[in-house]
Length: 215
Image 1 (tube, helix red, strand yellow):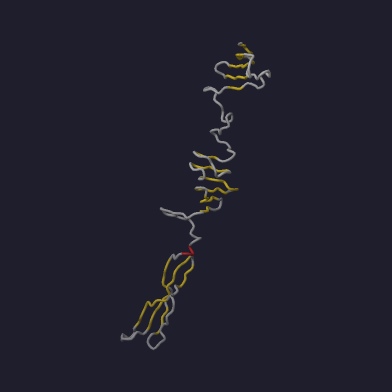
Image 2 (image 1 turned 180 degrees about the vertical axis):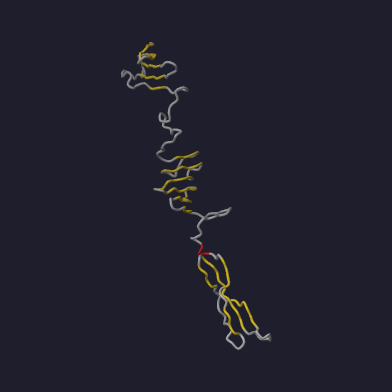
């Protein structure tokens, strides 16, 4: 049968079908005006209509993200891991991309790790970046702070303070590590050298000048 049911200033159309036989002896459809939705409920054996109305989703009455257990466009929370194009075997709070063991995984408070074929290769922390493998760079690395490796390379080179010594009828200079001769003087113009001059070779490492040593 067909029934008209008033509902607060409007009404709904109820279509009732009854075979009175089988596991589903009867079914009802509830139709709202102006394509306002269709719901149904079905009977079970002799128990009648045990459950309330169930609505049909249509092109004009589409389900919300919450209705179908999906994330809304505005965002939401996924409980568990996520696989894009593949199942996820990294587990925990992780995302894999195209490969079931390659992606990102959160391994603790403030710890974000990158995995490739199930192997951790990089870690992001709030105070440091940690590479678990060698890094190959084809471009230029431009740090803003050289303090951690300034002490391992020579920044500048110079000759230190001048020292003079008597060569003619004097001691001259012995072999001293790091020094080079920079002058030889002949005051009277004869064939003999009167004096010698030398300076230490120095290198700058960090903020400190060091005399060069000998092997």
